[in-house]
Length: 618
Image (cartoon, helix red, strand yellow):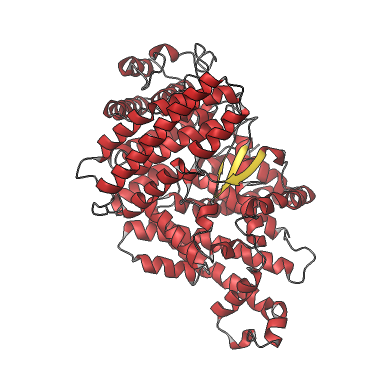
């Protein structure tokens, strides 16, 4: 989430006097803050106050938003870790309760339509925050602390938002607080009743060791930054000493965690229907219930699988003519549907990157994709020079093969960074088979141009806080999924001059669409029933045609989280519905450029607002 540039800004000045300058754990006058929101009725101002509280209680989140300090101390937030003490968790709860009650007391009928939408988004956000605090075990999930610590340090080195000397000073300050931070984490995890899930424990240990290990932030990135700085020896040595101590604290915590927490019985990762439906309603704000979305996904699975089989049969014998002549592959007429598809993908998988070349190969796709978007006049694009691609930092390893951290909304001039999890991809020989060149191009479109990177560049233009900051998951993932399929529908292929090149791109597109459909199915079924894990893997392997490594990784992701995996299919499904209505409304005046720019220019609100906006009279 995102917040304001400084308390000097006109948008934030109303809340600054309720907080003292941050110490190791921010001193927040929570009673004064509650009094301030009670006195406020403007929705945008309330959003500012809510976010200001969040950044004070969790200073590293400020960097994610492009906010680094106060007028008195421009780096105040950069210098501190989040407050994960018992008092800090209590302050979060009190603030959320007070903010929820304040929003509930507002008469929505008296608001403008834009404010009504913002009010609903804020109500869902604070409701989800309370659900995570009270029922989704945020305090007792070890990844809360491990990822929070990793984000705090990686945020200081991810982008050159300030001179390296200043960022190093902040790095050292956060190092000095690491021992206390991890002591509070121990206290939260210590009770015998705390039983993290198996995948949480495994991931936490891996991320801790990666962060403190030889290739991590402290032993690799930090020395490189010090070498590039102009710090004098005294100051550089002080930072080295602070961070050496931090590494010792992290290693000690890792040892303690492995000895005391890992041996405990694994906790239950399935949410159960009631809790899942609550999380789904607040996170998604979507017109279909989980059961209704599941019906749509299962129908889409059958339909899309059939399309993939038809494409495979249409090219199988021609594409594999040489292998058929050599007796290595049988003709399609002799094979079942699944084998026909697997034969084509097995051959296509030979044209893939290695973990050593994946990042360079991703960069190399930009010109072809941008050129196609411009040629087809699908939408105006920001410069791709603002998109950087690199290996994921250790504290984010093991969750998703690819993910993007977009430019902060209050520092939109900075870069967006797309991460490949090269460590995860190297864990199984067949993992990279999923990422043949046509698939790599679609991932670039999804994560970069014209997917998430472009979407957030558009969102950063908003003046109001809620559209600029709060993104709806289905809209965000739906846009990236939709625009990838649209490029292929318009004729994009990474093989424009190769026989069967377009059909191969179509097949890859259908396979990735199948992946998003199955994401939704397995997430809903696994968390709302006792559906066996091996059935989820079987679905990914057979009708989904995924490799074993990809399927196992996605199962772990479903066990590590909830609901988010449904957002890809849900958003794509909703956008396609709106597209058909929009075409009918516009008739002969319809253009994809107008539709796409209107859609992405709306920000990322829930679909009730998107549909209303897209179909409104101009």
